[in-house]
Length: 334
Image (tube, rainbow, N blue to C red):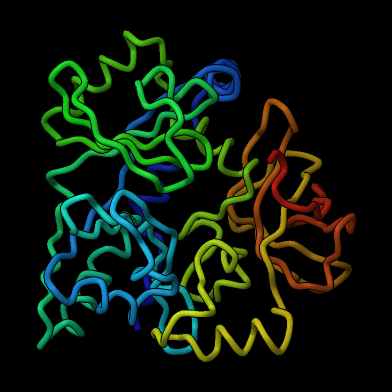
């Protein structure tokens, strides 16, 4: 089992980043919603290659890797045998035939160890390329225009170009583009984006967009205690027509025979609340707050996996009861 917690370093970094003032966040938020803004991401990159690479990943991950054409991708997860999340990831089929796994840094060492262990006897090589590549997100309606990748889609579609000497692979996201480049060219890419008119924004500003879009983040909103259906990622991450993969049976059983006892929901908060604060329906705890933020458009909102007896419109007590949370449908903003 690859269970892992959010590291203290990661959590403390996120708390420190949240110190960005409301005035700064408001301006950055407007840039992300009306124009385009960019930021450097902290991600891990695993490159999988070899004659058996596609077939091997097909039996490990939840989505249909074999169906991917070059320059396309999908969202997927690695589960344990009970169907619980060990990591989510973006799977990109590159033009050269390699497969790029883009995931959070914390679970990456365990995922790498797992994939290498079970690939013994196969023509598969898994490389940790995290130190060689940098990812910057360009978010907003003008992302494609400013970066020279107009019309790139659907999500996970890729296109390469050389931009004033900087080699950039663009990957379409739900809110713009991710731009992949070599680490030594990351600063040059950032300068090109500034000159093109993109605003440099903070992690908390980008997190507001993510929460409004209703997309959970591993380690904050979902983790090794969650099944895909509970985390609200089944539609994006799981293919029920492909062959067997680790954790398939419990995931399929939950999908076809019943409803999860818990599921990802939105919360409209009466006041800002902390990550991990308990949520109570009457006297019963029904969940804890995941990512919470102060949206300039919506006020204080959050994501949380809550028990199914908490219905849309129900008002929950938060922590000691001074704040309340109204259960809401996701996404907050499509």
